[in-house]
Length: 117
Image 1 (cartoon, rainbow, N blue to C red):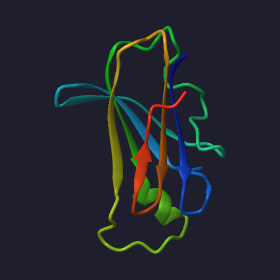
Image 2 (cartoon, rainbow, N blue to C red):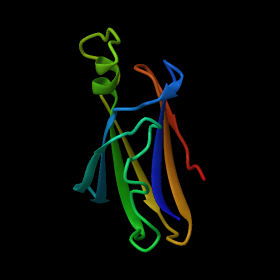
Image 3 (cartoon, rainbow, N blue to C red):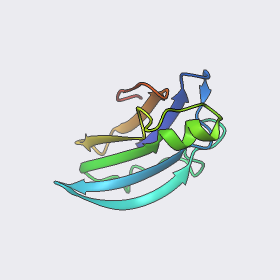
């Protein structure tokens, strides 16, 4: 239970190890930084879930993924400005007794997400 994320690099066909991510709580237009982390070799938070079941609250959240920084570090030749810089996903948690998994599939030119399990 709780909140987790996972990022897959669809350009290279692998987890997005080394990508910088930020987690925020949001209230309207105001966002409060909860934590910054760098994805591990499996494209996940090295400390495990972002929130465990006891800590996750009903509300709105934002995950921000540094797509440009990740692909630049991988040596991908990117135009200036790059098509995607930072991908921000705003989502809501309505049921704290359920697991919220927010995966990101990303390349320098596209991304998709869904509520995973």
